[in-house]
Image (cartoon, rainbow, N blue to C red; front, side):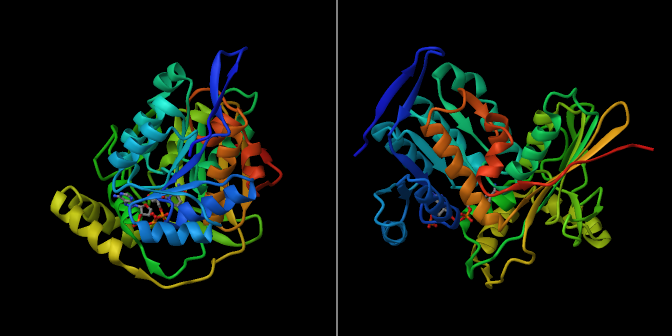
Length: 383
Ligand SMILES: NC(=O)c1ccc[n+]([C@@H]2O[C@H](COP(=O)([O-])OP(=O)(O)OC[C@H]3O[C@@H](n4cnc5c(N)ncnc54)[C@H](OP(=O)(O)O)[C@@H]3O)[C@@H](O)[C@H]2O)c1
């Protein structure tokens, strides 16, 4: 049963649902369970929402006997949200371009919204609801996973009180421990459908910002060879992702690239990829790729390096260059912690109404509250 206490903040005339339920959509999934565990550490008992009663019941038992709500689709989940009025909904059901519009519409009527979106179209779509969320007094937080939060947090920290830089590059270097199992529908669909789908270039092509606008960029392009603060070397290359949008908004820079150690950076892949992604223009091939990918069985393997990293390099008009790093542990664990910490802060009435990425709403301290550590910033002048 929902126990909802609505308080009014007299100063801002805003309403917050305090003490109401926190729902995790996709509560039986990998991310859903990681978020439930992190919420429990913060004293919040979530309600697990999903489409399979048995899988949900097993997940609920692991989460110490959580309440469950069975709903077979995003539309059914939205119906239950409207009917039962949770205070905060955490959406882990990708592809978010498909589920976020339906779920956010329901949330605007009853409470706050958090998701794990990490693709340009889904993140942009939620951020586009800023006016509607402000008018409704709701807080929508998109991109609350490792990639957006780890990179955006460094940019927010380096830009505080400064004019906008002219150039920004963010790099995410996740270290993920993989459990044996299927890739699954949500992740497979997000991988296939998550390539831009926004203006500024081909439907299944890469993006960067040029002159303040989204522009074409090769997936796997602009490789950089980074030496991590612990001495390990990695190569990152451009990948169109939510990080790109978050870094541009946090910095105001006209020229922005988002890169990842997970991007295919080899010269061969850079030749093969444009042809491979062109094939995705066919709905039949996309459908086939989704179904095949969802069934792929992955073997368990330990995290490849002790830490995951968010990195940002910012360049200002006077030639000043600053580089910052955020060190976190295993990336999926951080992806569990970020939504949980966002929920904790929302339940305490922190954050203003509107639509935001996590560090844009809660600042660089959010990543620290999730176990992240900022390393000392290096400053130099560009030659
Ligand atoms: N931003 C980030 O850093 C980050 C990190 C990790 C994951 N993600 C994203 O989060 C999403 C979930 O990833 P995951 O690894 O947790 O996947 P997962 O383990 O497959 O979990 C997905 C959950 O969603 C449910 N689901 C899938 N399709 C559904 C549908 N059509 N209707 C209702 N429920 C559905 C699944 O239910 P069943 O159990 O019934 O299949 C499962 O509970 C993916 O889109 C992924 O890209 C983002």
